[in-house]
Length: 175
Ligand code: SF4
Image 1: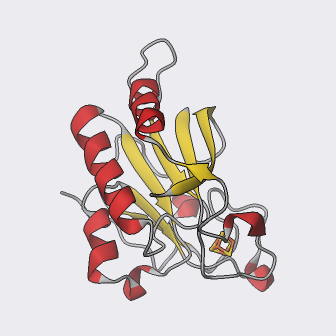
Image 2: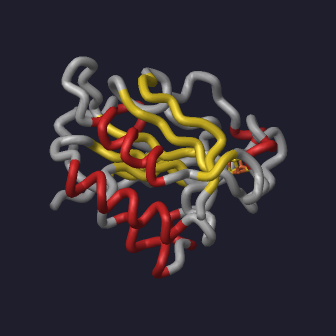
């Protein structure tokens, strides 16, 4: 079972628009200056139950407070232990929450993802990759903590990404 450190049913900080955000447990990168080392342990936090998943799906589809999508952060959603759980969750969101986008933050770089991790890319819209590097820290960056991290626009979103958030190494793919 995957464990989580937190769930915000309404979040306007972690990604564009109003969102649901899930912070999962488990990270093996151990970046110096990590904003939240208590998320590193896989056995920390609380279990992500089916009941929580149902609530997340209901929140994403709640028309009283329209959500643009789901943000997955941590910890690291692509920690090998979390991969099967996240794969199932993103596929379910795709199926049951039409029109919602999915952003995912990971400490791995896109180029080093395993085949199992890459499968998840098929079901998300945006990947923000790379470890947090204190020497590259820049408070002006949006949705990234340090300049070495890249926002990968895996699909064309209805949202137009701000130009300053596409790094020269970033790519945009369309369906
Ligand atoms: S990848 Fe993120 S959660 Fe993991 S150690 Fe680095 S900053 Fe912390």
